[in-house]
Length: 422
Image (cartoon, rainbow, N blue to C red; front, top):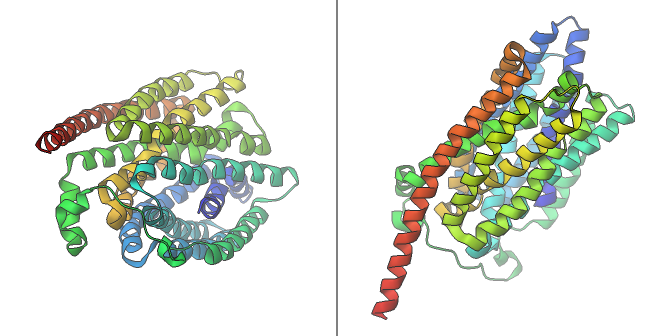
C-alpha cells in the first residue's frame, strides 16, 4: 500500500513541480505571466475542490464495497487522467484532466484506511497510519527528487507527465496482484478492535445513526476544523513551494523541484515520531502533541515571512523544512489514527472521508486564493496568512486537547469503578 500510494503522489506532485514550466509555456503562447499564474492556481483549486467533494463519498464507498476495490479504481483513473493532461493544449483540457485526476485520487486514502482497519489491531493504529503516511511524504519527496532528475536530463513537462502515468500503470498491476482486503483472504483471522462511536450508534445495522452520532460529537467537529486549517497550510506548500523557490529564492527549475522535496521529507520524519508517541500516550496524548506542534509551526511561519529569501536561501529551506516537521505529524493523525478511533474497522473509512473532505475544502483555498495573495502582497503576505491560519488552528487544538482530557478522565474513573466492583 505504501508503494502504491506513493504512485498516487507521483501523479499529484507533478503539477506542483512542473507548474513553473507550464506557466512559462502559457506565457510563450501570449498569456500574461500573472494571469497564467492565477489561471493555473484556479486549475489547482478546482482539483482540490473536486477532491474534497469526492472524499465525502469515497470513505462510505470503501466501507461499503471494500478498500482494495476503491484503491485500484483510483489508480486506474489516475493513469488515464495524467496522460490526458499531457496531451492537453490549453486551460479546458488542463482543468478537466486535473479535476478527474483529483477525483480518482480521493479513493486511495479511504481504501487504505479500510484495509488497515481489517489487518491491524487498534493498539497499533498510530504506528500503522504513520507508516502509511510515508507514502505521501517520503513518496512525495522521492517523486519530486525524481522529477528534478528528469528535468536535469532535459525532459519537458509533457514527457514527465507521460513517465508518471506509465509508472502508475505498473504500480496498478503490482497492487492488483499483491493487495488483499483482509487476513481472511489468506486464511487468517482479523485482529480485535476498540470500542468506537459506531458501537454506540447501532453498530453496522444503522449507518445513518452512526453518521448522526459522529456529526453530533464535539471532538469529531473539532478534528474537522483542524483538518480545514492544516490542509490549507499543507496544500499551499505542496502546490507553490517550487514556484516560490523560482520566483523569490532564485533557484533554477531543477533546483526548485529538488529542494521542494525537503518539506515532505521532514514531514515523513514527523509522522514517524508522532505515530510512536501517539500510540504510547493514547488519545489524550495525541491531542497535546497536535497543540504543541501547531504553536511551534505558527512561529516558524511568521519567521518565514520575514526572511530575505534571495540572500538567505538556506534559511528559507530550513524554515520550510521546519514547518513540514511540525505540521505533518499532527496532520497525519486527523484522517488516520483519530478517524479509526471514531469509526473503528466498520466505519473508519467513512470518518476519514468526512475529515479529509472538510480538510480539502480548506485546501481549495491553497490554489487560486493563495496565488492572488502572492501576486497582490508578495510571498511575505502569503506566509503571514498561513501563520494566522496556524494560530487559529492552535486555538482549536487547545479546545480538542481539553475535550480529550475530559474523556480520558472519565474513562479512567469508569475503569477504576469496574475494578472496584470486581
